[in-house]
Amino acid sequence: MTLRHALVRLVTPLVWRVPGHGARKLYGFARAEQASRIDLLLAAQRTASLARRALYLRHALDETRHAAMFWRRSTELRLDDQRAPFTPPVADTEDLFERLGERRFLAFVHRGERRGREQFELYARHFGERGDPRTEALFQAILVDERRHESYTRSLLVELAGGEPAARSELRRAALWEAWRTWRRAGRALAGAIYALAMTLIYLVTGPVAAVGLRAMRRRARWQLAAPVPQPSTEPATPPAGPAMQPPAEPATQSAQPAMQPPAQPATQPPAQPATQSTQSATQPPAQPATQPQAQPAREASR
Ligand SMILES: [Fe+2]
Ligand SMILES: [Fe+2]
Image (tube, rainbow, N blue to C red; front, side, top):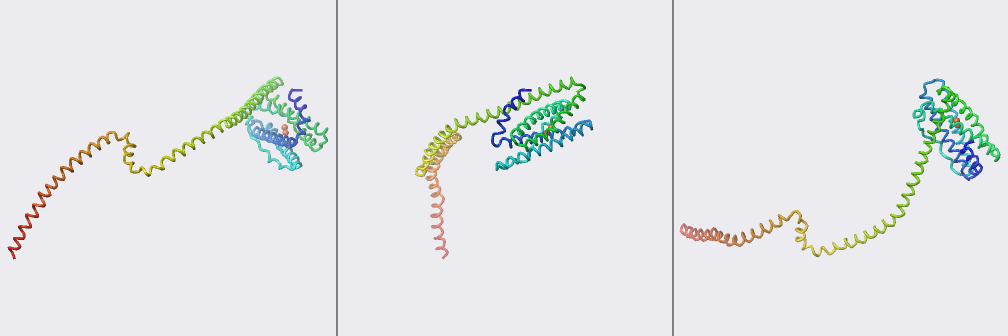
C-alpha cells in the first residue's frame, strides 16, 4: 500500500461528509475523465498501429461515458442540496502522446488507471458502508472499465518496450516525470498564492499612504489655484510679465528691442518733427503762399 493510498483511505470517511464536497469531487472526476478522453483520441489519431488505434478509441469512448456518469451524479447531488448544477465538464490537453512518445504515454496512462482503480474501489466500499447504493453502483460500474484499461495498457507497454524489465523501467521513468510535473504544478500554485498575498499586503500598506499623499496634493492644489484669482487686477502688469516669461529666448531680443526702439523713437521723433515741420513748412507753406497769392492776381488779372 502506497503512502498516497493510505492517506486517501484515512481521509475518505471525513471529506465525503463535508457539505457540498461530494458533488464537487464527482465533478472533478468528470473533468479528469474528459481530459483522459482527449488524450486517448489524440493517441488514436497519431499511433502508427491500427490495432492500438482501435484500443485507444474504445478507451476514449469509455472515458466519455465515465465523464457523463460522474457529471450526472454530481448534478443530482447539487439539486438535492438545492444548488445550481455545474456546467458540462470541460478539460484541456497536455498533448501527452506527442510529448512523451507512445511507450512513455502508455506507462503514464497505465499508472493513472491503476491509481484510479484503487481509489474507486475505496470509494465504492465507502458508499456501500454508508448506505448510498446509487453512488456505490456508479463506482462499481466504472470500475469494470477501469480494470480493463489497467490491464490492456500494461500488455501494450510490455509489447512495445520489448519485455517486462523494459516495461518496469518505463514505468519508473513515467513515475519520475509525474513527480516532476506534480512539483511544477505545486510550485506554480504556491507562487500564485504568494503573489496574491504579497500584492494584498502591498495594497494594504501603500493604500493609506497614497490616500494621505493625495489629500496633501489636493490641499496644495487649492492654494495654487487661489493665487491666480487676483491676477485680473494685475493684468496691466502683464506686459512686463510677458518679457519675464520669455527670458530664455529673449536675452538677445530684449537687449535688441530697447536698443532699437528707444534710440529709434527719440532719434526719429524729435528730429523728425522739426524736420517734418521744416519740410512741411518747406513744401506746403511755401506752396500755399506761393500759389495762392500768385493765382489770385492772375484771376484778377484775367477778370
Ligand atoms: Fe475512466
Ligand atoms: Fe480509465
